[in-house]
Amino acid sequence: MRAVDLYMVILVIYSTVIVMNIKKEQVEKAYGIVVESMPNTTFKVKFENSEEKLTYLSGKMRKNRIKVVLGDKVTVELDKYGGKGRIIKRN
Image (tube, rainbow, N blue to C red; front, side, top):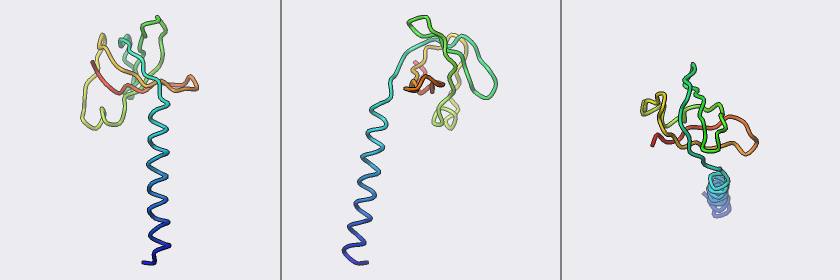
């Protein structure tokens, strides 16, 4: 492998890591309580400011089969555009 090719590979990997770190920092987190369970691991969560929002279970929670039931306190990553939230932790 030539030095130029190796430099390009390192540059691509490094830039990908920077983009991933920036994306994770921009996510807003909120805390709430599950008030309704719906099909396909979607839930309605009531937040501290008495707002209800549709949320879904994150991939890691699905993979590790972490159960979420009514009344659970959860941590939710909120979409900055006002869409669905993602449940990332059961408190």
